[in-house]
Length: 184
Image (cartoon, rainbow, N blue to C red; front, top):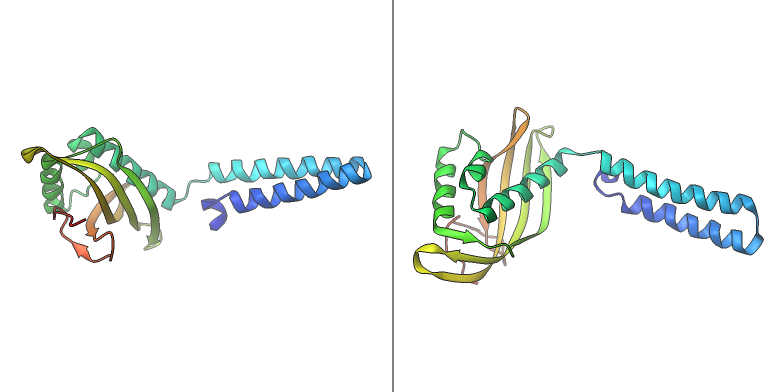
């Protein structure tokens, strides 16, 4: 499955082989070596294009995480809440409260995004860090924040929905409250 997640090992292999055949072509001047070098470059391009065409469930969930951040940055509470399962009204309430309290600035970036698929690819756990500037509206407070999150996703029909959220301490990974103030 690694091939469908990351094309670069295959692309690198074809590129190295192309360089070997190019070197042999320059050294020996054989048309066959030039042709094989060209074939290896076409192979590298084919591996990349095939990988881009295959979208795995993990890649879909990763795109959902990116979309969730974009919705948060835009302050689109309705769009954020649509990404949460209708079976978890408590989580929707907590998320809506958090978005009402804070503004997430455009400089917030996701790093260390990892997705683990479970239950025959119908459930996923995404782990990521979100770092950047946030503002607390009620007290005119703005600061850089380093956060770490684990979201559990469930496939509901054709859509992926968040069914659980864990906020983790960015340093030691201990679970903390979703709206707790970070001590960093």
